[in-house]
Length: 138
Image 1 (cartoon, rainbow, N blue to C red):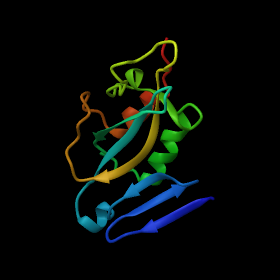
Image 2 (cartoon, rainbow, N blue to C red):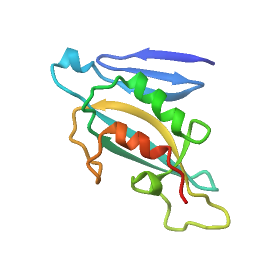
Image 3 (cartoon, rainbow, N blue to C red):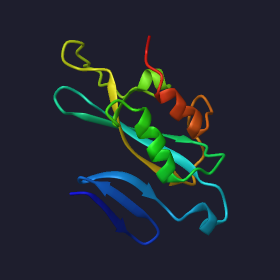
């Protein structure tokens, strides 16, 4: 299965191989104001249990979701994985983290345009966060 776009009332979702990649509402131009970007990610432990999280970033340059998605994937490990602690977003580890079985990588899920205020504890723009994704722990 390749790319599939599903349209709903005021948003669209892009799926690739059954997995949501981009979810977007009406464009900022249609709404008349700037949209922020919600970065959705998850942690999957060795038992395949999942914790989900989101962080909202400002999008000062109003970069398109398609371009942001491309920029994100270029900086991830296998276009999917990243170190949440190194990237400066909350880790989603379970309380019973087992160093011998579990790992440190989190998974990128999707990005969304949102009206909500930024929640990033470092007050970064989405492009600054994306740059941090490329850095590897020392």
